[in-house]
Image 1 (cartoon, rainbow, N blue to C red):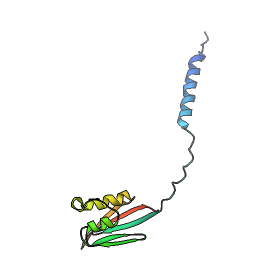
Image 2: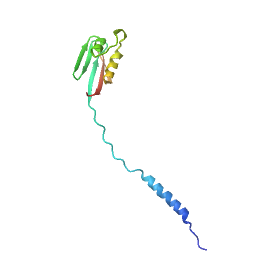
Image 3: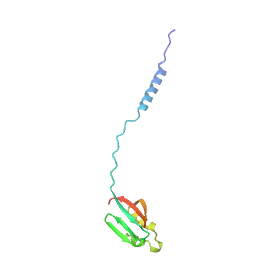
Length: 118
């Protein structure tokens, strides 16, 4: 008696293998995205805000014997009795400056800032 081969199971197995091969290939490679536009930065430094210090940035060179005086020269409006050094940093943040480093020096701390060039 001759053996019969059923073609339906073979077709199903062939379809599964073909699907697996297609999935194993993955999706076509995506083109590499263009690099983001390069940002130009400007830098500033807030020197010893708790004592005689100042603010140095491109086109600006302010000096003051008190942090509050410097704050007012830079446009701050907080009353002196409510002022503390964090108000000076907040004011710089409102102007787009971002703190990137604090360096302890012999005469106090210096706060290094950056922002996108304007």
